[in-house]
Length: 329
Image (cartoon, rainbow, N blue to C red):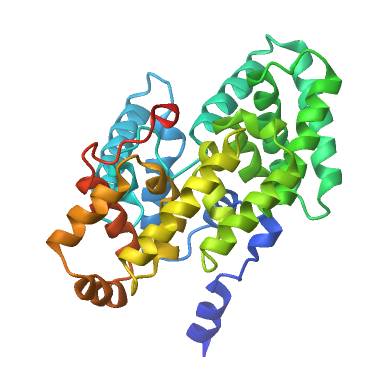
């Protein structure tokens, strides 16, 4: 009986991602801070923290920290070689990784944090505090730490597009990011990260976003159109978004006629940029010469990762190995 009570006491409470504004990095950090929940959990948390935490970036002459950094880098390299679902996305012929839209935003965030810590930018702290107040007021459930992180990312975006000269300009960027998040039904964090990839999104109206999503929903009704925008911001969120949606729609019809018994919507959601490579028709013909339609249909029904694998196969059959047009490379 005593053992049962102990096990029950150690059982981790369920957490609602909405309490963390669906920021799963922050949710993971919170869960890791709850303490040791047993030897297996301890080991996994230890690996995760050291492979993806501060040890990788820490700068110190400490021998102990130096050894931990070696371990962290080695363990991360090991994970990157594992053939799991999303890992192969970087090999699909595109220079910028589609696995995350946070790369540019994260890099600029580190610069903002460094400037605050060094004290060399006196006005920066006040700007962050003001934008943080805006974000806290925009979402009733938003947590203080999340709002501060979002404020710094929004400020870095304002600097990126040259709108950091006045408070009014910064506030305008903040408000626009909030509008984009509502139009795309995504989190503000996702919206600001996407805008770092495609700054033209700030000057694209919410009406245009909604129209583009509606058109994509018509051609790919089972696809998550919001995910498509966040996967390929430069494709759908810039001034040429309407033109690109038309190209994607046209090529989606070709894919559906070429693979009638395959879940093409899943392919479009996974890799929308595939549909703008210049020789997609030739790639389809090449692939169909190697495998029959029936074989594709059977593989789709048996393989949960078929959309990813079909995307890679089509890119491989392209004469340009799936390279994107110059404006997206």
